[in-house]
Image 1 (cartoon, one colour):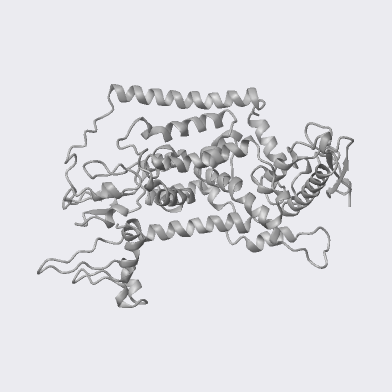
Image 2 (cartoon, rainbow, N blue to C red; image 1 turned 90 degrees about the horizontal axis):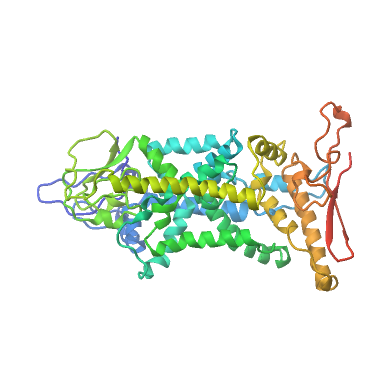
Length: 530
């Protein structure tokens, strides 16, 4: 089994030696492209494709397939984020029969792939959500599927699919490589931080507190774009009065996003190598790998593979750190002797001698055991600390029954989509938590802003109800009803189980607002049977 997807190092064959046979992809491409685009393997002269890739960068020259896949995934993520999830392309029909559904129809038209595709294949998000709710989450099946794929392509999500990793690569290439004062040369205590952070995340999830939305790979880039570029899109596209105000959660998400990028000043892709807890899940999954990077005895110890490896997955003796290798195959493209191969795990044909040159890596000793113990204890303490802080500051986290009840209360009965992760619900929550205008600004500009806010809340509530008509009204944020749980039980809430279907209320939101004596906008949603 060979999984060679790299562009081999070009060299002129020796006298009497046959030129190497091109790979399957090269042979297929030669049927459709001109011969001048390909290298002359007999004389060792590069073709036009190699010349272009060399100008772009060494990683493009050595592993162009990986770079193309990364670019496609990043562009797809950005299209889903800025176009598919942008609701203002919907236009109502001329004649509307019943409840308007142009928002849902427009979303279905634009959604060539599900908008949450990247989120559901992040296994840490699905796993921590299921542990916090103590119930099955449908996205676990998607996470299991990507883990099964990574059995054949170890950590393939990190090396090929993750849009955050591609953004980090762009930052390191454009900015991080120009600042060398903060570089760390040797590995330190931080090499296993991702495992301790993963442990803390799972311990907090067991206590009912979800922190994966702040540290997992896909939520990090989603929050970063949502609070940095999405407000600019809304402001320039629909007006700056529709941009919700910043709060502490927004600032924290933006700071975490720039910290993830800023770690590249220490080492390229520092976050992916040592900190990312989503990567730690895939690293543990590498223990069940089928394929692996192998080094043959023809290795000349040139050190080129160590210098270009983006994940620090090559030991000083040029063998592989199997838990860190993403099978990106960048190292094979720069090997002058083509001694690197990607084959089945149990392949032992003509392999290089281990520990030559010496790696100075020993088995787990007393210091290593103590360091691992301290790290594990820190992870458990961190998870319990976050859970305790949530109980003290943010209210006691619900247990398994409470979380399940809250999840059901915020879930659409028709589409099965949870309101907690819906971008419209998040925007509604940010607008509803906005502080009202003071007495000083109850007239003039303050009144105009309150009126715009009231109208915006009404439009967004109607839009959310159109997209997910089975969503209970009590989960709509910003609904002032005088009750702690939202709307009353008789209006859009829970109704008696023995009530006949003909007498049940099918709620239609009618948004109205009035100004209080202090100029505060009070939005209310009334329901009427129809």
